[in-house]
Length: 225
Image (cartoon, rainbow, N blue to C red; front, top):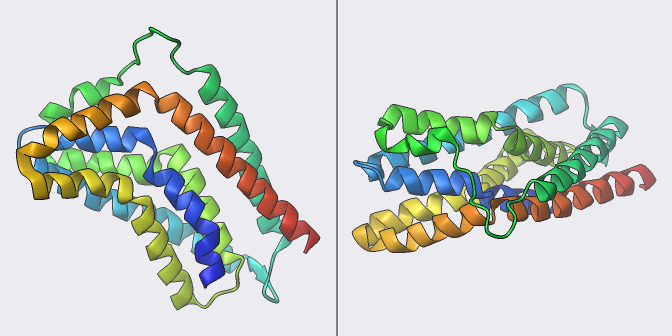
């Protein structure tokens, strides 16, 4: 179980520091009734990540992801494919980064966050975790890493819960700061939002490069094991 948690920890950290969800929750918290909306956003985010991870675990269990305690060949193939895809995404993110002096574009839905209801804020949280291709990719990779260890169902669930909580630190932290510091958190969170918006592409490209290399390494290790 410890090895499985160690394998998914980098993936969880990568999700936790993705800029877009952090920017979104900061904007939600800065809107009217921000604390209630932020809580809805974070709870839906947790549900989204957990749902993706649970579905992949069920699928992997049905296909026997572990053979006598060793990863099944198909799992290593999946990890290799995901790793290569992440390297491609890293290159695309880097090429698309804003050049010096260019303004970082803001998605239209982010400009409308001030008008979000609690339900819409929760919907945004779910979409950004459970339907966002980048998050789904990393969560699926984490679930595959868990499944290949041959753990019992209860142990798999425990590792998945730990993964979801660690992966949610990025959106949980602004909420906690707002609840603890109140209005004093606004300047801090606005500074964080601006920095992450400016360097979004660079952060994502580095994360995808590192995680892609990790998954490819895990796959190669599985093939030679």
